[in-house]
Length: 408
Image 1 (cartoon, rainbow, N blue to C red):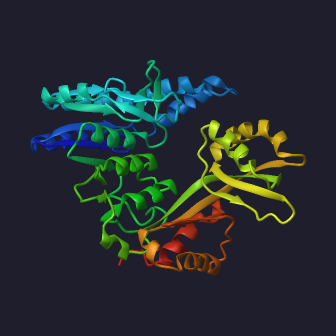
Image 2 (cartoon, one colour; image 1 turned 135 degrees about the horizontal axis):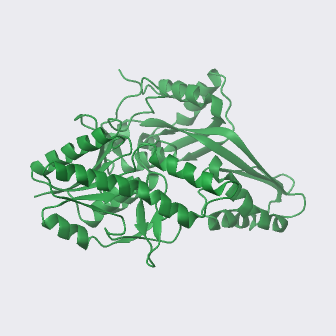
Image 3 (cartoon, rainbow, N blue to C red; image 1 turned 45 degrees about the vertical axis):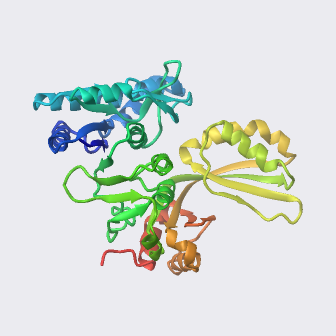
């Protein structure tokens, strides 16, 4: 008997009927002779409503992150109970578990916790008793009993981590799309589904704004060798298989184009170009647990330079608060400025390692369309630029077409 972990996103469980559809799919999997652990997200829209409630009751203030975790965790707890109820009403034997009950232990960083350990003995015990286990995604518990949440896309991470912990034979990530596409098909209508993709490629796409998978989840899968499939919960079409790269994968230069809106650029101007400056700046940002992506430092000719980096626009206030205490240490005349209204566009492909000219082709396509590039960042298998947020949809279509990624 094989063991399968399935994850269902918020859209997949967005209505009572969809929850029953998920329950039927889980039952079909069990009927094929498999043990099943199903990880579910909060119903579509529930998390946003909970955040609005928190804003309404705190007014001008900010909800404490500890209490936000307690609040947000209830979204998944509602879904696990409803899914277990649906299964039980169909004659199955199902038990719901919160992250804490499933043995998921995290560090103490509220709203963006990291999994530190999983003790799945209770999950194994329930499975061996013939139960289907319905597990709350997105959450865990600290060693001293505090509820934590894992950040955006945390249910994916729950599924991948649990699959590794219980040595599952297969992990399936069910969502509202048929798999991983060459670009978001809602933005680029000609985007096509990718049959297989390497961990590294999907990791770069996820970190560049692709919403199909959370980057931390892909990173975890790569570290522990968890092969998983991204597929739709609304049909039975094959999805996209995510695994370690193979030689044949390098023949494709560009695997996909990803975009990320709602970005902001933070610029510190007039700093001295001396050792230790970047350490002070990004040490403060790191202590605030902020994720920084692109970093650009201007060439210094006078001993004075500017340093810019991007963060999500929702993190700008935290970044400014973290940097103000270190500003006096950076010298006189140093200024701090944050600008939003920008977006990131990336092209990704492991074939870039052995093919040149990708960046030039991307820049030419954007230039020919009159789209201005503000910042540029590269890695071994990715080229990223920032553009005005109002240009991002057009930029994605232009670049997608330039690399011939559309459906035949």
